[in-house]
Amino acid sequence: MLGFLIFLYLLSTLTFGFYINRKSKNAEDYIFAGSRLPFWVSSFAFFATWFGSEMIIGSASEFLDRGFMALIKDPIGAALCVFLIGVVFAKHYYKMPYLSFADFFKEKFGTKVSIFASFSIILAYLAWLAAQYIAFAVVLKTVFALPMTWGIVIAAVIFLVYVWWGGLLAISLLDMTQTIVIISGLIAVAVPLISEAGGLPEIVLKTDPKFFTIIPEFDFMSLVTYISALITIGLGAIPQQDLYQRVKACKSANVAKYSAIFSSFLYIVICLIPLFIILAVKISNPEILSDLSDEQMALPKIVLEKSNLFVQFLFFGAILSAILSSASVCILAPATVFSENLLRPLFIYIGFKRKVKDLNHIVTIKIAAVIITLISVLMAFIKGNIYHLATEAATVTLVSLVSPFLFAMFAKYNSRAAAVFSMASGLLTWIAFSIFLWEFPAPLAGFLVSFSVYFLTNKLEENQLRAPIKLSSE
Image 1 (cartoon, rainbow, N blue to C red):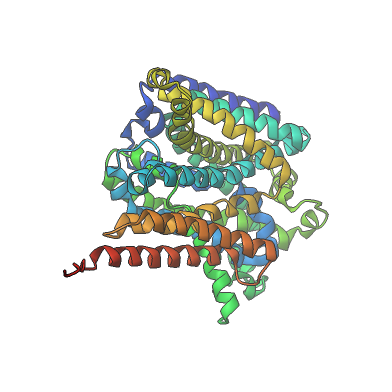
Image 2: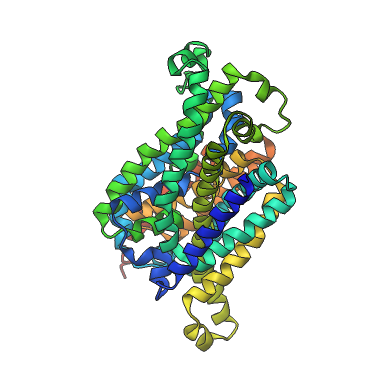
């Protein structure tokens, strides 16, 4: 019965996407939902961007092992990112005339830099998308006893069809309904389980106080590790296509600003619910968690063993809603970048200029979506930890794009050479620290090197341009 209800839920979601697709008249409608979303719809859309599988399933295993310190990357870092988008960047994003965020780098630094930026943006989404496939497969394994391999393939097909038919308008309109399902499902599971454990005060009393610590120890390595975790998503996800699309989908810059700020606080509050569910069960029914071969199965197993059919449907509906919302944007965003900055220019380069002009932007985005889906499926098969895949996804843009982006946004002078050297040095530093396992956190090392190289190169070139020209005397 549970499986049948889930099947109906997915079918109704895909049907709605097909219906909304008929309202998309051009690429702006498909990518930016026609820039007409009001406050509440856009707020839930911002929330749904981040609230994916890693918070309902993936974070549970990390939370059990490390306590609240496991939350620094996500949700705290993710909430910081959305908050900064609202406070600082929304007004700038809303004025940008681009379909693809990589075009910002093209305008500031030229075509070659924008191509590099496009690859960095796309790579960041592949890991996050792979995490959503795995989470969806976990649900199918729990409910239908399907092998993980089949679950990943089915997830990829459903996500692709969802994006193919609906675009951002369908995604955003469903985000509001799905967020309500998410909150309802989590509360329906949390209330009886927390009550069984004696309530929140009792849970806190029975848990080691160190478990709730979110402040690092005051030694150098603890501090830099903490900062690295905080900025991986907190800064690394700022120059990304999905948040740019969410801003552009709002009906005004002010709506984008306040929607982002509101959703950042909503995100942290809702993310705490599945974590306290885990903590409650750890206290009241530790045997449920003790025999798990995969801790990512913790929450699904708890719900199946401790809840009735209605609550089970709400919970798994919440997971599916979160995954669909997050994954759909994770396909549409990189597909847009791939189409506008790589695929269409490639067609022009090999001699199809006239055909490309006649080819609808939506068509090339859908072609790119298929390519993105295939690559991310391969990544899901290679690496299977949801939380690590999701939280590491923004590292690529942190070490390569954040510094050029910040300087291009706010500095008076910007050098193309500075951008190239900054991107390359940050990426190479991160790779080197990761390969040789040096103690200093690799993401922070990459970001600091990228920022320093850009600043020094840019300053040097700016000083050379301002230096007076000495005329030789006869």
